[in-house]
Image (cartoon, rainbow, N blue to C red; front, side, top):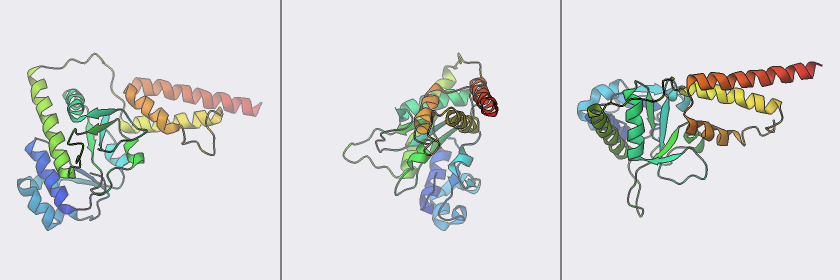
Length: 241
């Protein structure tokens, strides 16, 4: 949960997670740093006080996503640019496959009033939406979490009966590996004048979405970073001539 402002929603989220068998709640820069001890959070957590007590508090979404190989930004708003858009059931199927392969995933929920910012969505692998009444599609953040937690729980139950065999033997790249590669990629593209050094960020989001769709492996990231290293090395050699 990113920048949650209402302690009650944090408690309700903990309860929603526990009912579906999940326990790893992460709070990104909550408005109240002591939200885990807030009476409203404790009351609405009900029997899930253990999930609430163990909730991890971090300063940035980047920190929260470290170690994950798949992440979903929950939003109901249309975005002109962004990661691929899927619905809650598709999100649950992808999540189940990753979880059965012992990979770490993240569901990212925005602040109650304004949701997720574009730069936060850009850090995620997919945009996920919950199909609802088009005339009134707004769900409370803990309600949205409950819906998605149930979908993932149901998908996991189905997949436990039908084991999944992955056609990919490689290890998926983690969030921090991909972010480090993107910074390296940006440096290389600036060096060969593909990106404007005054405005290097203009095309980077589009490239980030491109790589998100590819679901890069650690081997592929290493290969691409090797290309970046060679570009930078060659450019430096040419500059020294």
